[in-house]
Length: 231
Image (cartoon, rainbow, N blue to C red; front, side, top):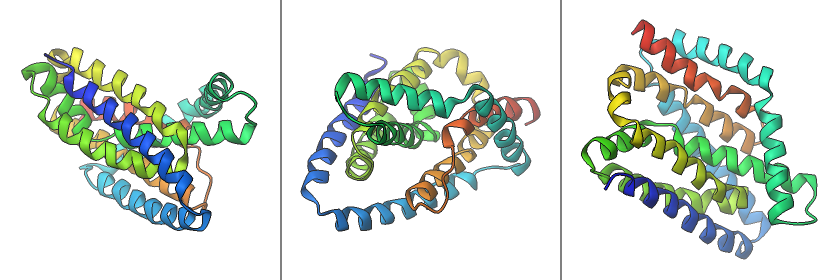
Protein backbone atom coordinates (compact mmCIF):
# COMPACT_ATOMS: atom_id res chain seq x y z
CA UNK A 1 0.00 0.00 0.00
CA UNK A 2 1.43 3.38 -1.03
CA UNK A 3 1.71 6.09 1.60
CA UNK A 4 2.68 3.98 4.59
CA UNK A 5 6.16 5.51 4.64
CA UNK A 6 4.76 9.04 4.81
CA UNK A 7 2.30 8.09 7.56
CA UNK A 8 5.16 6.55 9.58
CA UNK A 9 7.29 9.63 8.97
CA UNK A 10 4.62 12.05 10.21
CA UNK A 11 3.88 9.85 13.23
CA UNK A 12 7.58 9.69 14.15
CA UNK A 13 7.82 13.49 14.07
CA UNK A 14 4.78 13.86 16.34
CA UNK A 15 6.11 11.28 18.81
CA UNK A 16 9.56 12.88 18.77
CA UNK A 17 8.08 16.34 19.31
CA UNK A 18 6.06 15.14 22.29
CA UNK A 19 9.19 13.62 23.79
CA UNK A 20 10.99 16.90 23.13
CA UNK A 21 8.35 18.82 25.09
CA UNK A 22 8.97 16.59 28.11
CA UNK A 23 12.73 17.00 27.70
CA UNK A 24 12.38 20.78 27.36
CA UNK A 25 10.54 21.04 30.66
CA UNK A 26 13.12 18.92 32.47
CA UNK A 27 16.24 20.84 31.40
CA UNK A 28 17.61 23.95 33.10
CA UNK A 29 17.56 27.06 30.88
CA UNK A 30 21.37 27.23 30.80
CA UNK A 31 21.53 23.67 29.47
CA UNK A 32 18.88 24.41 26.85
CA UNK A 33 20.89 27.38 25.58
CA UNK A 34 24.12 25.38 25.26
CA UNK A 35 22.37 22.46 23.58
CA UNK A 36 20.60 24.84 21.18
CA UNK A 37 23.92 26.35 20.13
CA UNK A 38 25.33 22.88 19.48
CA UNK A 39 22.28 21.92 17.43
CA UNK A 40 22.50 25.20 15.52
CA UNK A 41 26.10 24.49 14.53
CA UNK A 42 25.13 21.03 13.30
CA UNK A 43 22.28 22.51 11.25
CA UNK A 44 24.72 24.96 9.63
CA UNK A 45 26.95 22.03 8.61
CA UNK A 46 23.98 20.05 7.23
CA UNK A 47 22.91 23.03 5.12
CA UNK A 48 26.41 23.51 3.73
CA UNK A 49 26.69 19.83 2.84
CA UNK A 50 23.43 20.09 0.92
CA UNK A 51 24.63 23.25 -0.85
CA UNK A 52 27.69 21.41 -2.16
CA UNK A 53 25.40 19.06 -4.13
CA UNK A 54 25.06 21.69 -6.85
CA UNK A 55 26.72 21.26 -10.21
CA UNK A 56 25.99 24.86 -11.17
CA UNK A 57 26.17 27.43 -8.39
CA UNK A 58 24.64 30.05 -10.71
CA UNK A 59 21.33 28.17 -10.59
CA UNK A 60 21.38 28.28 -6.79
CA UNK A 61 22.22 32.00 -6.69
CA UNK A 62 19.60 32.96 -9.29
CA UNK A 63 17.03 30.74 -7.58
CA UNK A 64 17.63 32.42 -4.23
CA UNK A 65 17.38 35.90 -5.75
CA UNK A 66 14.19 35.21 -7.71
CA UNK A 67 12.74 33.17 -4.87
CA UNK A 68 13.40 35.96 -2.38
CA UNK A 69 11.67 38.50 -4.63
CA UNK A 70 8.61 36.24 -4.91
CA UNK A 71 8.61 35.55 -1.18
CA UNK A 72 8.87 39.22 -0.24
CA UNK A 73 6.14 40.15 -2.71
CA UNK A 74 3.70 37.67 -1.19
CA UNK A 75 5.07 38.22 2.34
CA UNK A 76 5.24 34.50 3.11
CA UNK A 77 6.98 35.17 6.42
CA UNK A 78 4.23 37.53 7.57
CA UNK A 79 1.47 35.16 6.52
CA UNK A 80 3.12 32.25 8.32
CA UNK A 81 3.42 34.41 11.43
CA UNK A 82 -0.32 35.07 11.17
CA UNK A 83 -0.88 31.33 10.74
CA UNK A 84 1.21 30.72 13.87
CA UNK A 85 -0.83 33.30 15.75
CA UNK A 86 -4.05 31.63 14.61
CA UNK A 87 -2.85 28.21 15.79
CA UNK A 88 -1.71 29.73 19.09
CA UNK A 89 -5.12 31.36 19.59
CA UNK A 90 -6.90 28.05 18.94
CA UNK A 91 -4.58 25.77 20.89
CA UNK A 92 -3.16 28.04 23.56
CA UNK A 93 -5.65 30.71 24.60
CA UNK A 94 -4.17 33.83 26.12
CA UNK A 95 -0.62 33.38 24.83
CA UNK A 96 1.16 36.53 23.71
CA UNK A 97 2.71 37.43 20.38
CA UNK A 98 6.15 36.16 21.31
CA UNK A 99 4.72 32.68 21.81
CA UNK A 100 3.05 32.81 18.40
CA UNK A 101 6.35 33.90 16.82
CA UNK A 102 8.17 31.02 18.52
CA UNK A 103 5.52 28.56 17.37
CA UNK A 104 5.84 29.78 13.78
CA UNK A 105 9.64 29.62 13.97
CA UNK A 106 9.59 26.02 15.15
CA UNK A 107 7.09 25.06 12.46
CA UNK A 108 9.04 26.74 9.64
CA UNK A 109 12.46 25.47 10.74
CA UNK A 110 11.32 21.87 11.17
CA UNK A 111 9.38 21.88 7.88
CA UNK A 112 12.49 22.98 5.99
CA UNK A 113 14.72 20.38 7.63
CA UNK A 114 12.27 17.52 7.12
CA UNK A 115 11.10 18.37 3.59
CA UNK A 116 14.25 19.55 1.77
CA UNK A 117 16.55 16.78 0.69
CA UNK A 118 16.86 13.69 -1.44
CA UNK A 119 15.40 11.24 1.09
CA UNK A 120 12.03 12.99 1.12
CA UNK A 121 11.74 13.08 -2.67
CA UNK A 122 13.33 9.75 -3.59
CA UNK A 123 11.62 7.95 -0.72
CA UNK A 124 8.18 9.28 -1.64
CA UNK A 125 8.66 8.44 -5.33
CA UNK A 126 9.83 4.91 -4.51
CA UNK A 127 6.85 4.44 -2.21
CA UNK A 128 4.49 5.59 -4.97
CA UNK A 129 6.04 3.65 -7.84
CA UNK A 130 7.11 0.43 -6.14
CA UNK A 131 5.10 0.45 -2.90
CA UNK A 132 8.46 0.27 -1.14
CA UNK A 133 8.60 2.62 1.89
CA UNK A 134 12.07 1.50 3.04
CA UNK A 135 13.73 4.88 2.50
CA UNK A 136 10.89 6.73 4.24
CA UNK A 137 11.06 4.34 7.20
CA UNK A 138 14.75 5.20 7.56
CA UNK A 139 13.90 8.90 7.23
CA UNK A 140 11.17 8.52 9.85
CA UNK A 141 13.73 7.22 12.33
CA UNK A 142 16.07 10.15 11.67
CA UNK A 143 13.29 12.75 11.71
CA UNK A 144 11.90 11.35 14.95
CA UNK A 145 15.26 11.79 16.68
CA UNK A 146 15.77 15.26 15.18
CA UNK A 147 12.28 16.36 16.23
CA UNK A 148 13.09 15.53 19.85
CA UNK A 149 16.10 17.85 19.74
CA UNK A 150 14.35 20.58 17.74
CA UNK A 151 11.30 20.65 20.01
CA UNK A 152 13.48 20.80 23.10
CA UNK A 153 15.07 23.92 21.63
CA UNK A 154 12.39 25.56 19.44
CA UNK A 155 9.19 24.53 21.16
CA UNK A 156 5.82 23.04 20.25
CA UNK A 157 5.75 24.51 16.73
CA UNK A 158 7.87 21.57 15.54
CA UNK A 159 4.98 19.14 15.96
CA UNK A 160 2.94 20.94 13.26
CA UNK A 161 5.67 20.20 10.71
CA UNK A 162 4.33 16.64 10.68
CA UNK A 163 1.37 17.95 8.65
CA UNK A 164 3.75 19.61 6.17
CA UNK A 165 5.63 16.34 5.74
CA UNK A 166 2.39 14.40 5.35
CA UNK A 167 1.06 16.73 2.64
CA UNK A 168 4.40 17.20 0.82
CA UNK A 169 5.51 13.56 0.71
CA UNK A 170 1.96 12.35 0.25
CA UNK A 171 1.56 14.47 -2.88
CA UNK A 172 4.90 13.24 -4.22
CA UNK A 173 3.78 9.66 -3.66
CA UNK A 174 0.44 10.21 -5.40
CA UNK A 175 2.12 11.97 -8.35
CA UNK A 176 5.10 9.59 -8.50
CA UNK A 177 4.44 8.30 -12.03
CA UNK A 178 4.48 11.85 -13.43
CA UNK A 179 7.27 13.27 -11.28
CA UNK A 180 9.67 10.43 -12.09
CA UNK A 181 10.26 11.95 -15.52
CA UNK A 182 10.93 15.50 -14.26
CA UNK A 183 12.82 14.69 -11.04
CA UNK A 184 16.10 13.55 -12.57
CA UNK A 185 19.20 13.20 -10.41
CA UNK A 186 20.63 16.47 -11.75
CA UNK A 187 17.41 18.37 -10.98
CA UNK A 188 17.22 16.80 -7.53
CA UNK A 189 20.79 17.89 -6.77
CA UNK A 190 19.95 21.52 -7.51
CA UNK A 191 16.82 21.37 -5.38
CA UNK A 192 18.87 19.82 -2.58
CA UNK A 193 21.51 22.55 -2.97
CA UNK A 194 18.86 25.09 -2.01
CA UNK A 195 19.09 23.37 1.34
CA UNK A 196 21.58 26.16 2.01
CA UNK A 197 18.43 27.74 3.47
CA UNK A 198 18.82 25.25 6.31
CA UNK A 199 22.10 26.97 7.13
CA UNK A 200 20.06 30.12 7.70
CA UNK A 201 18.07 28.27 10.38
CA UNK A 202 21.30 27.63 12.27
CA UNK A 203 22.36 31.26 11.86
CA UNK A 204 19.01 32.43 13.25
CA UNK A 205 19.29 30.03 16.19
CA UNK A 206 22.76 31.39 16.96
CA UNK A 207 21.29 34.91 16.78
CA UNK A 208 24.03 36.06 14.41
CA UNK A 209 21.46 37.50 11.98
CA UNK A 210 17.69 37.41 11.66
CA UNK A 211 17.09 35.96 8.20
CA UNK A 212 13.54 35.84 6.82
CA UNK A 213 13.87 32.24 5.70
CA UNK A 214 10.22 31.80 4.76
CA UNK A 215 10.45 34.56 2.16
CA UNK A 216 13.20 32.58 0.43
CA UNK A 217 11.25 29.32 0.19
CA UNK A 218 10.13 29.88 -3.45
CA UNK A 219 13.80 29.44 -4.38
CA UNK A 220 13.30 25.68 -4.13
CA UNK A 221 10.67 25.69 -6.87
CA UNK A 222 12.65 28.16 -8.98
CA UNK A 223 15.68 25.86 -8.72
CA UNK A 224 13.60 22.92 -9.91
CA UNK A 225 12.36 24.90 -12.93
CA UNK A 226 15.80 26.27 -13.89
CA UNK A 227 17.49 22.91 -13.47
CA UNK A 228 14.82 21.17 -15.53
CA UNK A 229 15.24 23.72 -18.34
CA UNK A 230 19.02 24.17 -18.42
CA UNK A 231 20.48 20.84 -17.24
